[in-house]
Amino acid sequence: MTAVQARTSAEAAISLRSVRKTFGRKVAVEGLDLSIPQGAIVGLIGPNGAGKTTSIRMIMSIIFPDSGDISVLGRASAVESKDRIGYLPEERGLYKKMRVGAFLTYVGRLKGLDSGAGLERTVRNWLEKVALADCYRKRCEELSKGMQQKVQFIASVIHEPDLLILDEPFSGLDPVNSRLLRGLVQEQHERGCTLIFSTHQMAQAEALCERVVMIHQGRKVLDNTLSEIHARYTPREIVLEPCEDLDERGVRAKLHESVVPALVDVRPLAGTGRGQRAYRALLTPAADAPQTLRAIAGALACNRIEIVRPTLEDVFIEIVAGSATTGEEREELLAMMRAGKGGGEASGD
Image 1 (cartoon, helix red, strand yellow):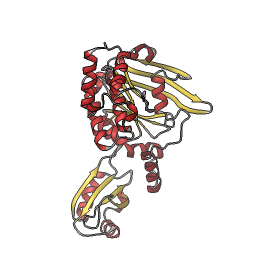
Image 2: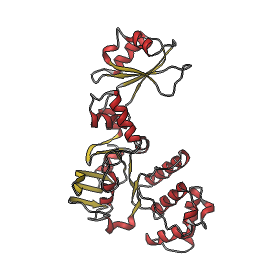
Image 3: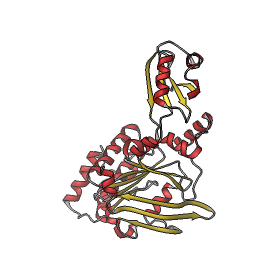
Image 4: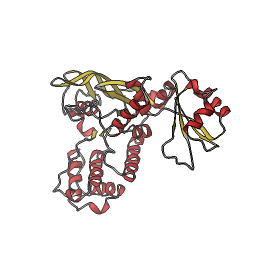
């Protein structure tokens, strides 16, 4: 039994059963069933407008479902377990006139921590950990957006919650601070905290999560561990770098006789120039990737050739648009996701 399976058998930290939420005529969430085991780290993914934030707000009892049942940490409402929950909302907000140290001390007291030297030491240690040690006496409004976001993250974990919910936590962070935040999230997971975070940046979920729940247009379309997803969705792309200096036409000509029935298209690999030509060979749904790789290697001498495992973005495209999606439609949907668009939701997700 894996660690994930062992935790699944325990009492769920979060449970949703047949949850539905509408805003006027807009159906934001429909028939959502979800069970998050204690100690798991789960990514709630999909484009903005999919229903992620609405689902999180219902879990947090900020809004209530039209129908269905929700339990959080064994209670019927998150309000009953509020001191055991940490929450970083999508809408960032601090008491701008308060000083950072005073703000975090105030939040700690609200979450049941004893005030005094111990709490001040905890606040200062956290600020040092996120490279904000010199900000203890600064007003929140004096901080940059990224610095404010780090302060809000501290506010969500200062009481060492049993459950941590992060809504788009990496939005607006530069690469350095994104890496820092990923490390802090991992630390929370390692101490046994249950984590669920919402993101439209699927690469972040793939890097952090052991399980992903994919939502599209208010409905759950995938709920599996990463290992299960990789086993379920077969590779449909091969990257190759020919020994010869060939353009796309030349590569296609070399592959025409033995390989072309297994190919949808051959395209240049992004980020490679004339001095390092590499290509993506996109495979048909029926193609056998290892067999096609051997056929390519036999038809074309390559410096590099490898099968590429489907990403979560690839899986999302396959689920939402189907395997018959054209290249142009696929790229358009990917661009929409990466831009954070997805069809609008009345609640702001």
